Image 1 (cartoon, rainbow, N blue to C red):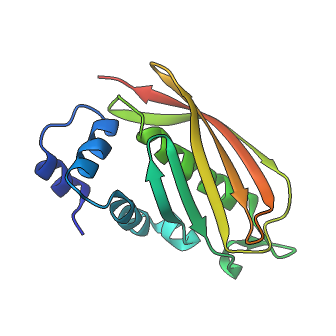
Image 2 (cartoon, one colour):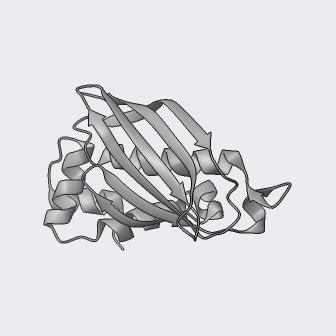
Length: 161
């Protein structure tokens, strides 16, 4: 699997994060596999077991398992893990529409609706609006029975050249 540096070399000059995704797709590179390699290289995300399933323009679908190492007392997934997953999924969705060179989470709010106890879990993230410098996105976290367990809404600052 090529690294992002190798991808950049193979697709030529890029002008933005979004441009990188578009050129990688145009070169018939499997962006989901590439991003999953990235997740496995990040110790925390690898530990959680987060895996991308689908990436599109302004949309990401991912999943993560129910496992003892990410639980809190009572056998439910820890809220910090849920926020980390939502931040990662939404940040990636924003990357797919970001015409800038970088981005940062400016704000993230999560509504914990039900305990996450029936995994594996699915997370769907979608960009609601992307302006010149700010993007707003929302995520839904579902359990194995398709019950909505958490809802996240965040804002990302997109850094321009």
